[in-house]
Image 1 (tube, rainbow, N blue to C red):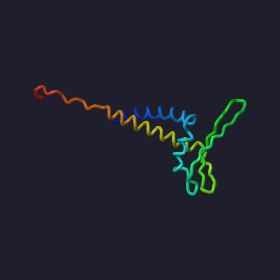
Image 2 (image 1 turned 45 degrees about the horizontal axis):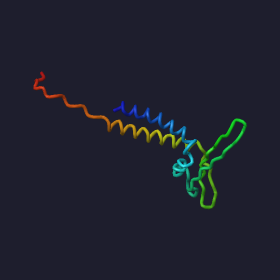
Image 3 (image 1 turned 120 degrees about the vertical axis):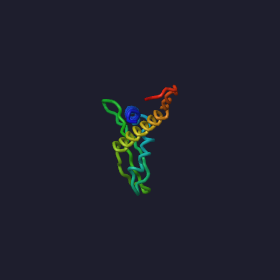
Image 4 (image 1 turned 60 degrees about the horizontal axis):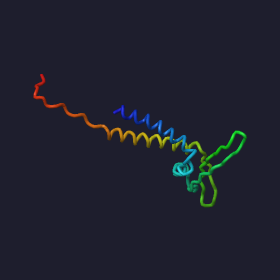
Length: 121
């Protein structure tokens, strides 16, 4: 059993890393809101992801920040790193679980030895 788990974990880390490093470029704002139940505490229950774009001599950079907002408009800054690391770990766990289930599903039990009529001493 350790061999499929190690293979699935290796695949999960590799694929989860790829997904997580593409994440800030493509789908971070939508997915970051999913971490709100972990970081937003009462009365700051509404997640909002803010994108700040900076232009300088080196080019353009984008900074995403998760804010938790109350009904009255007060907010807390939850930052980028903790929600990102949470999603990074979640991607690794999800990919590892999917690969492990697929590997275990694909395993076929070995055929029982053929009956030859010989007597084993």
